[in-house]
Image (cartoon, rainbow over all chains, first blue to last red; front, side, top):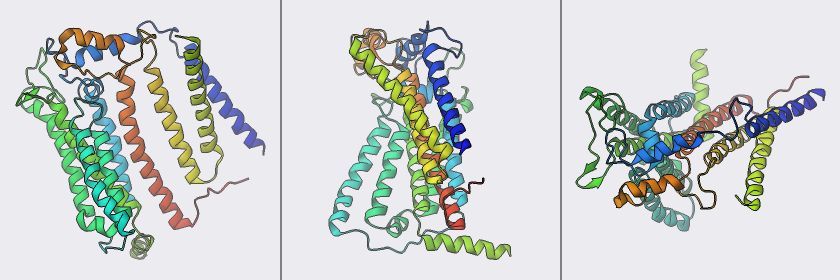
Amino acid sequence: MASRYLIAASIALVVVSLSFAVAYGALGTAVPLENIRSLARAYVTLAYAPWNRTLTAMSPEAVTSIVWDFRGVDTFFETTVLFGAIIGTVTLFRGIKPSARIGEGLSIIARSAAAVTAPMILAVAAAIALHGHLTPGGGFQGGATAAVVALVILVTFSLGYLVSGLSKERALMLRSAGLLGIAAVALIPLILGGVVFQNQAKELSQFSYPAYIGGALTSGSLLFYNLFESLAVAAGLTLTIMLLLSPHEVVEEAVRGEEHERV
Amino acid sequence: MSEFEASLSLIVLFSLFANTAIALYGVFSKPNLVKKLISMTILSDTANAFAIVIGYRAWPSPEESPVPPVLTNISGGYAAVQELVQKSVDPFPQALVLTAVVIGLAVTIFLASIILHYHRTHGTVEMVVSG
Protein backbone atom coordinates (compact mmCIF):
# COMPACT_ATOMS: atom_id res chain seq x y z
CA MET A 1 0.00 0.00 0.00
CA ALA A 2 2.90 2.32 0.78
CA SER A 3 4.19 1.93 -2.78
CA ARG A 4 0.88 3.25 -4.06
CA TYR A 5 1.31 6.48 -2.09
CA LEU A 6 4.89 6.71 -3.31
CA ILE A 7 3.70 6.44 -6.91
CA ALA A 8 1.03 9.11 -6.35
CA ALA A 9 3.57 11.42 -4.71
CA SER A 10 6.10 10.94 -7.50
CA ILE A 11 3.48 11.67 -10.18
CA ALA A 12 2.44 14.84 -8.37
CA LEU A 13 6.10 15.86 -8.07
CA VAL A 14 6.78 15.25 -11.78
CA VAL A 15 3.72 17.20 -12.91
CA VAL A 16 4.28 20.12 -10.54
CA SER A 17 7.96 20.42 -11.46
CA LEU A 18 7.12 20.15 -15.17
CA SER A 19 4.51 22.89 -14.93
CA PHE A 20 6.96 25.02 -12.92
CA ALA A 21 9.61 24.46 -15.56
CA VAL A 22 7.29 25.52 -18.35
CA ALA A 23 5.69 28.44 -16.54
CA TYR A 24 8.82 30.01 -15.04
CA GLY A 25 11.42 29.07 -17.61
CA ALA A 26 13.39 26.74 -15.34
CA LEU A 27 14.81 25.14 -18.47
CA GLY A 28 17.32 27.99 -18.64
CA THR A 29 15.44 30.51 -20.74
CA ALA A 30 14.25 33.98 -19.85
CA VAL A 31 10.49 34.58 -19.74
CA PRO A 32 9.17 35.97 -21.99
CA LEU A 33 11.55 34.59 -24.60
CA GLU A 34 13.23 37.33 -26.59
CA ASN A 35 13.20 35.89 -30.07
CA ILE A 36 10.62 33.11 -30.07
CA ARG A 37 8.92 34.67 -33.07
CA SER A 38 11.91 35.11 -35.38
CA LEU A 39 12.08 31.45 -36.43
CA ALA A 40 8.36 31.37 -37.27
CA ARG A 41 8.80 34.67 -39.13
CA ALA A 42 11.60 33.20 -41.23
CA TYR A 43 9.67 30.04 -42.07
CA VAL A 44 6.49 31.87 -43.10
CA THR A 45 8.42 34.48 -45.09
CA LEU A 46 10.44 31.92 -47.04
CA ALA A 47 7.75 29.28 -47.63
CA TYR A 48 6.53 31.04 -50.77
CA ALA A 49 8.96 33.65 -52.04
CA PRO A 50 9.47 33.64 -55.84
CA TRP A 51 11.58 36.80 -55.39
CA ASN A 52 14.06 34.85 -53.24
CA ARG A 53 14.51 31.67 -55.26
CA THR A 54 17.65 30.44 -53.53
CA LEU A 55 16.01 30.14 -50.10
CA THR A 56 12.33 29.44 -50.71
CA ALA A 57 10.43 26.14 -50.82
CA MET A 58 7.92 27.57 -53.32
CA SER A 59 4.92 26.32 -51.33
CA PRO A 60 2.22 28.61 -49.88
CA GLU A 61 1.75 26.05 -47.09
CA ALA A 62 4.38 26.76 -44.42
CA VAL A 63 3.84 23.49 -42.52
CA THR A 64 4.44 21.28 -45.57
CA SER A 65 7.48 23.36 -46.52
CA ILE A 66 8.95 22.69 -43.07
CA VAL A 67 8.05 19.01 -43.15
CA TRP A 68 9.53 18.16 -46.55
CA ASP A 69 11.94 21.00 -47.35
CA PHE A 70 13.37 23.07 -44.48
CA ARG A 71 13.54 20.09 -42.11
CA GLY A 72 13.23 17.24 -44.62
CA VAL A 73 15.84 15.02 -42.96
CA ASP A 74 13.88 15.20 -39.68
CA THR A 75 10.81 13.92 -41.48
CA PHE A 76 12.86 11.22 -43.15
CA PHE A 77 13.86 9.75 -39.79
CA GLU A 78 10.36 10.20 -38.37
CA THR A 79 9.10 8.19 -41.34
CA THR A 80 11.72 5.58 -40.48
CA VAL A 81 10.25 5.25 -36.97
CA LEU A 82 6.76 4.88 -38.45
CA PHE A 83 7.83 2.08 -40.76
CA GLY A 84 9.93 0.43 -38.09
CA ALA A 85 6.75 0.11 -36.04
CA ILE A 86 4.83 -1.32 -39.00
CA ILE A 87 7.64 -3.78 -39.79
CA GLY A 88 7.58 -4.79 -36.11
CA THR A 89 3.85 -5.52 -36.30
CA VAL A 90 4.28 -7.53 -39.50
CA THR A 91 7.10 -9.50 -37.88
CA LEU A 92 4.97 -10.28 -34.81
CA PHE A 93 2.29 -11.66 -37.13
CA ARG A 94 4.69 -13.57 -39.40
CA GLY A 95 3.39 -16.82 -40.84
CA ILE A 96 -0.21 -15.66 -40.56
CA LYS A 97 -2.10 -15.59 -43.82
CA PRO A 98 -5.41 -13.71 -43.65
CA SER A 99 -7.90 -16.07 -45.30
CA ALA A 100 -9.63 -14.86 -48.48
CA ARG A 101 -12.90 -16.56 -47.48
CA ILE A 102 -15.58 -13.94 -48.10
CA GLY A 103 -17.97 -13.68 -45.17
CA GLU A 104 -21.51 -12.38 -45.06
CA GLY A 105 -20.78 -8.91 -43.72
CA LEU A 106 -23.38 -6.52 -42.39
CA SER A 107 -26.87 -5.86 -43.74
CA ILE A 108 -27.54 -4.73 -47.33
CA ILE A 109 -28.19 -1.19 -46.04
CA ALA A 110 -24.79 -0.93 -44.38
CA ARG A 111 -23.07 -2.48 -47.37
CA SER A 112 -24.74 -0.11 -49.85
CA ALA A 113 -23.86 2.89 -47.72
CA ALA A 114 -20.27 1.72 -47.48
CA ALA A 115 -20.09 1.14 -51.24
CA VAL A 116 -21.24 4.72 -51.84
CA THR A 117 -19.06 6.40 -49.21
CA ALA A 118 -15.84 4.41 -49.75
CA PRO A 119 -14.97 6.09 -53.10
CA MET A 120 -15.86 9.46 -51.59
CA ILE A 121 -13.49 8.94 -48.66
CA LEU A 122 -10.83 7.87 -51.15
CA ALA A 123 -11.40 11.05 -53.18
CA VAL A 124 -11.08 13.20 -50.04
CA ALA A 125 -7.89 11.33 -49.13
CA ALA A 126 -6.44 11.97 -52.60
CA ALA A 127 -7.39 15.65 -52.37
CA ILE A 128 -5.75 15.98 -48.94
CA ALA A 129 -2.57 14.28 -50.14
CA LEU A 130 -2.20 15.89 -53.58
CA HIS A 131 -3.08 19.43 -52.42
CA GLY A 132 -0.77 19.10 -49.42
CA HIS A 133 1.58 21.77 -50.76
CA LEU A 134 -1.28 24.26 -51.33
CA THR A 135 -3.76 23.73 -48.48
CA PRO A 136 -3.53 22.18 -45.00
CA GLY A 137 -2.90 18.47 -45.33
CA GLY A 138 -0.25 16.27 -46.86
CA GLY A 139 0.94 12.72 -47.34
CA PHE A 140 0.54 11.56 -43.73
CA GLN A 141 -3.00 12.87 -43.36
CA GLY A 142 -4.10 11.70 -46.81
CA GLY A 143 -2.68 8.23 -46.22
CA ALA A 144 -4.35 7.91 -42.83
CA THR A 145 -7.67 8.97 -44.40
CA ALA A 146 -7.28 6.41 -47.17
CA ALA A 147 -6.67 3.67 -44.59
CA VAL A 148 -10.15 4.41 -43.19
CA VAL A 149 -11.60 3.04 -46.45
CA ALA A 150 -9.96 -0.32 -45.77
CA LEU A 151 -11.36 -0.31 -42.25
CA VAL A 152 -14.88 0.52 -43.48
CA ILE A 153 -14.75 -2.28 -46.08
CA LEU A 154 -13.39 -4.71 -43.50
CA VAL A 155 -16.19 -4.01 -41.04
CA THR A 156 -19.13 -3.84 -43.45
CA PHE A 157 -18.15 -6.52 -45.97
CA SER A 158 -15.62 -8.87 -44.33
CA LEU A 159 -11.92 -9.42 -43.92
CA GLY A 160 -11.99 -11.97 -46.75
CA TYR A 161 -13.53 -9.41 -49.10
CA LEU A 162 -10.72 -6.96 -48.36
CA VAL A 163 -8.01 -9.63 -48.63
CA SER A 164 -9.38 -10.93 -51.95
CA GLY A 165 -8.85 -7.43 -53.39
CA LEU A 166 -5.71 -6.39 -51.54
CA SER A 167 -3.65 -9.30 -50.25
CA LYS A 168 -1.02 -8.98 -47.52
CA GLU A 169 1.77 -9.27 -50.08
CA ARG A 170 0.24 -6.65 -52.34
CA ALA A 171 -0.15 -4.19 -49.43
CA LEU A 172 3.50 -4.77 -48.50
CA MET A 173 4.46 -4.20 -52.13
CA LEU A 174 2.52 -0.93 -52.32
CA ARG A 175 4.11 0.25 -49.08
CA SER A 176 7.59 -0.58 -50.36
CA ALA A 177 6.82 1.19 -53.65
CA GLY A 178 5.89 4.32 -51.70
CA LEU A 179 9.10 4.16 -49.67
CA LEU A 180 11.18 3.59 -52.82
CA GLY A 181 9.47 6.63 -54.37
CA ILE A 182 10.44 8.78 -51.38
CA ALA A 183 14.01 7.50 -51.58
CA ALA A 184 14.13 8.19 -55.33
CA VAL A 185 12.83 11.75 -54.96
CA ALA A 186 15.40 12.36 -52.20
CA LEU A 187 18.32 10.86 -54.16
CA ILE A 188 17.64 12.19 -57.69
CA PRO A 189 19.14 15.64 -56.82
CA LEU A 190 22.30 13.90 -55.58
CA ILE A 191 22.71 12.08 -58.90
CA LEU A 192 22.08 15.22 -60.92
CA GLY A 193 24.63 17.32 -59.07
CA GLY A 194 22.65 18.63 -56.08
CA VAL A 195 22.42 17.54 -52.46
CA VAL A 196 20.16 14.98 -50.78
CA PHE A 197 16.59 16.20 -50.15
CA GLN A 198 17.13 19.29 -52.29
CA ASN A 199 14.01 20.97 -53.60
CA GLN A 200 14.79 24.37 -55.12
CA ALA A 201 18.14 25.64 -56.38
CA LYS A 202 20.54 27.01 -53.77
CA GLU A 203 23.60 29.26 -54.15
CA LEU A 204 26.07 26.37 -54.17
CA SER A 205 24.06 23.64 -55.92
CA GLN A 206 21.96 24.58 -58.87
CA PHE A 207 19.70 21.52 -59.10
CA SER A 208 16.01 22.40 -58.88
CA TYR A 209 12.75 20.47 -59.17
CA PRO A 210 10.28 22.36 -61.40
CA ALA A 211 8.14 24.63 -59.21
CA TYR A 212 5.44 24.84 -61.88
CA ILE A 213 4.30 21.98 -64.15
CA GLY A 214 2.07 23.11 -67.01
CA GLY A 215 1.35 26.38 -65.23
CA ALA A 216 0.17 24.68 -62.02
CA LEU A 217 2.13 25.27 -58.82
CA THR A 218 3.59 21.91 -57.75
CA SER A 219 6.23 23.24 -55.32
CA GLY A 220 9.00 21.07 -56.74
CA SER A 221 9.56 17.88 -54.77
CA LEU A 222 6.80 18.50 -52.20
CA LEU A 223 4.07 17.11 -54.49
CA PHE A 224 6.04 13.90 -55.09
CA TYR A 225 6.89 13.43 -51.42
CA ASN A 226 3.22 13.84 -50.47
CA LEU A 227 2.13 11.42 -53.20
CA PHE A 228 4.54 8.64 -52.22
CA GLU A 229 4.14 9.21 -48.49
CA SER A 230 0.36 8.89 -48.73
CA LEU A 231 0.75 5.66 -50.71
CA ALA A 232 3.16 4.22 -48.14
CA VAL A 233 1.12 5.30 -45.10
CA ALA A 234 -2.19 4.06 -46.56
CA ALA A 235 -0.76 0.66 -47.51
CA GLY A 236 1.14 0.28 -44.24
CA LEU A 237 -1.83 1.10 -42.03
CA THR A 238 -4.14 -1.12 -44.12
CA LEU A 239 -1.66 -3.96 -43.69
CA THR A 240 -1.53 -3.60 -39.92
CA ILE A 241 -5.34 -3.31 -39.68
CA MET A 242 -5.64 -6.51 -41.73
CA LEU A 243 -3.20 -8.38 -39.48
CA LEU A 244 -4.61 -7.04 -36.19
CA LEU A 245 -8.16 -8.03 -37.07
CA SER A 246 -7.44 -11.46 -38.54
CA PRO A 247 -9.55 -14.16 -36.86
CA HIS A 248 -8.38 -15.80 -33.66
CA GLU A 249 -8.23 -19.34 -35.07
CA VAL A 250 -5.93 -18.38 -37.94
CA VAL A 251 -3.44 -16.70 -35.61
CA GLU A 252 -3.69 -19.55 -33.08
CA GLU A 253 -2.88 -22.07 -35.77
CA ALA A 254 0.15 -20.12 -36.97
CA VAL A 255 1.48 -19.70 -33.42
CA ARG A 256 0.98 -23.41 -32.60
CA GLY A 257 2.60 -24.54 -35.85
CA GLU A 258 5.70 -22.61 -35.00
CA GLU A 259 5.94 -24.26 -31.59
CA HIS A 260 5.65 -27.72 -33.16
CA GLU A 261 8.48 -26.94 -35.53
CA ARG A 262 10.68 -25.83 -32.68
CA VAL A 263 10.07 -29.11 -30.81
CA MET B 1 -4.96 40.11 -24.23
CA SER B 2 -8.21 40.57 -22.32
CA GLU B 3 -8.77 39.19 -18.83
CA PHE B 4 -11.21 36.60 -20.13
CA GLU B 5 -8.76 35.33 -22.75
CA ALA B 6 -5.97 35.16 -20.20
CA SER B 7 -8.05 33.06 -17.83
CA LEU B 8 -9.13 30.89 -20.77
CA SER B 9 -5.53 30.13 -21.71
CA LEU B 10 -4.78 29.40 -18.05
CA ILE B 11 -7.62 26.87 -18.02
CA VAL B 12 -6.24 25.24 -21.16
CA LEU B 13 -2.76 24.99 -19.65
CA PHE B 14 -4.08 23.69 -16.34
CA SER B 15 -6.17 20.99 -18.03
CA LEU B 16 -3.15 19.91 -20.06
CA PHE B 17 -1.16 19.41 -16.85
CA ALA B 18 -4.09 17.61 -15.23
CA ASN B 19 -4.24 15.35 -18.29
CA THR B 20 -0.53 14.61 -17.91
CA ALA B 21 -1.07 13.65 -14.28
CA ILE B 22 -4.01 11.36 -15.10
CA ALA B 23 -2.11 9.69 -17.94
CA LEU B 24 0.99 9.12 -15.78
CA TYR B 25 -1.18 7.68 -13.02
CA GLY B 26 -2.74 5.26 -15.52
CA VAL B 27 0.63 4.16 -16.92
CA PHE B 28 2.18 3.61 -13.47
CA SER B 29 -0.55 2.10 -11.39
CA LYS B 30 -2.95 0.15 -13.64
CA PRO B 31 -1.94 -3.51 -14.00
CA ASN B 32 -4.11 -3.90 -17.11
CA LEU B 33 -1.98 -3.50 -20.25
CA VAL B 34 -4.85 -2.14 -22.35
CA LYS B 35 -5.46 0.57 -19.76
CA LYS B 36 -1.75 1.35 -19.79
CA LEU B 37 -1.91 1.71 -23.58
CA ILE B 38 -4.91 4.04 -23.39
CA SER B 39 -3.13 6.16 -20.77
CA MET B 40 -0.08 6.33 -22.99
CA THR B 41 -2.11 7.62 -25.94
CA ILE B 42 -3.63 10.27 -23.64
CA LEU B 43 -0.10 11.26 -22.59
CA SER B 44 1.13 11.57 -26.18
CA ASP B 45 -1.97 13.51 -27.27
CA THR B 46 -1.46 15.88 -24.34
CA ALA B 47 2.14 16.42 -25.36
CA ASN B 48 1.01 17.16 -28.93
CA ALA B 49 -1.66 19.62 -27.78
CA PHE B 50 0.94 21.27 -25.57
CA ALA B 51 3.28 21.73 -28.53
CA ILE B 52 0.46 23.33 -30.52
CA VAL B 53 -0.29 25.70 -27.61
CA ILE B 54 3.38 26.72 -27.50
CA GLY B 55 3.04 27.71 -31.19
CA TYR B 56 0.64 30.46 -30.08
CA ARG B 57 3.17 32.08 -27.72
CA ALA B 58 4.69 35.50 -28.47
CA TRP B 59 1.73 36.32 -30.61
CA PRO B 60 2.51 39.61 -32.46
CA SER B 61 -0.99 41.10 -32.36
CA PRO B 62 -3.15 39.55 -29.62
CA GLU B 63 -6.13 41.73 -30.55
CA GLU B 64 -6.60 40.03 -33.93
CA SER B 65 -7.57 36.41 -34.33
CA PRO B 66 -4.79 34.14 -35.63
CA VAL B 67 -4.72 32.66 -39.13
CA PRO B 68 -3.21 29.32 -40.23
CA PRO B 69 0.30 29.58 -41.73
CA VAL B 70 -1.03 29.13 -45.26
CA LEU B 71 -0.72 31.78 -47.94
CA THR B 72 -4.15 32.07 -49.58
CA ASN B 73 -3.38 35.02 -51.83
CA ILE B 74 -0.57 33.70 -54.02
CA SER B 75 -0.75 36.51 -56.58
CA GLY B 76 -0.54 39.11 -53.79
CA GLY B 77 3.24 39.23 -53.97
CA TYR B 78 5.58 40.35 -51.22
CA ALA B 79 2.93 42.45 -49.43
CA ALA B 80 0.61 39.46 -48.98
CA VAL B 81 3.44 37.38 -47.48
CA GLN B 82 4.35 40.18 -45.08
CA GLU B 83 0.73 40.48 -43.99
CA LEU B 84 0.59 36.72 -43.34
CA VAL B 85 3.80 36.89 -41.30
CA GLN B 86 2.14 39.45 -39.03
CA LYS B 87 -0.88 37.25 -38.38
CA SER B 88 -0.02 33.57 -38.71
CA VAL B 89 0.69 31.13 -35.88
CA ASP B 90 4.09 29.47 -35.54
CA PRO B 91 4.10 26.66 -38.16
CA PHE B 92 7.03 24.78 -36.66
CA PRO B 93 5.28 23.01 -33.71
CA GLN B 94 2.49 22.05 -36.09
CA ALA B 95 4.99 20.43 -38.46
CA LEU B 96 6.47 18.42 -35.58
CA VAL B 97 3.05 17.37 -34.25
CA LEU B 98 1.90 16.32 -37.71
CA THR B 99 4.45 13.52 -37.92
CA ALA B 100 4.25 12.73 -34.22
CA VAL B 101 0.53 11.92 -34.56
CA VAL B 102 1.07 9.42 -37.37
CA ILE B 103 4.05 7.83 -35.63
CA GLY B 104 1.96 7.63 -32.46
CA LEU B 105 -0.69 5.77 -34.43
CA ALA B 106 1.84 3.25 -35.74
CA VAL B 107 3.41 2.74 -32.32
CA THR B 108 -0.07 2.26 -30.83
CA ILE B 109 -0.81 -0.44 -33.41
CA PHE B 110 2.52 -2.10 -32.63
CA LEU B 111 1.86 -2.08 -28.86
CA ALA B 112 -1.70 -3.31 -29.42
CA SER B 113 -0.42 -6.27 -31.41
CA ILE B 114 2.10 -7.08 -28.67
CA ILE B 115 -0.72 -7.00 -26.10
CA LEU B 116 -2.85 -9.19 -28.38
CA HIS B 117 -0.06 -11.77 -28.57
CA TYR B 118 0.39 -11.56 -24.80
CA HIS B 119 -3.29 -12.35 -24.40
CA ARG B 120 -3.06 -15.26 -26.84
CA THR B 121 -0.14 -16.89 -25.06
CA HIS B 122 -1.04 -16.09 -21.44
CA GLY B 123 -4.82 -15.75 -21.57
CA THR B 124 -4.75 -12.42 -19.74
CA VAL B 125 -3.73 -8.79 -20.20
CA GLU B 126 -3.06 -8.19 -16.50
CA MET B 127 0.52 -7.77 -15.36
CA VAL B 128 1.57 -9.92 -12.43
CA VAL B 129 1.99 -7.63 -9.42
CA SER B 130 4.37 -8.99 -6.83
CA GLY B 131 4.29 -8.09 -3.16
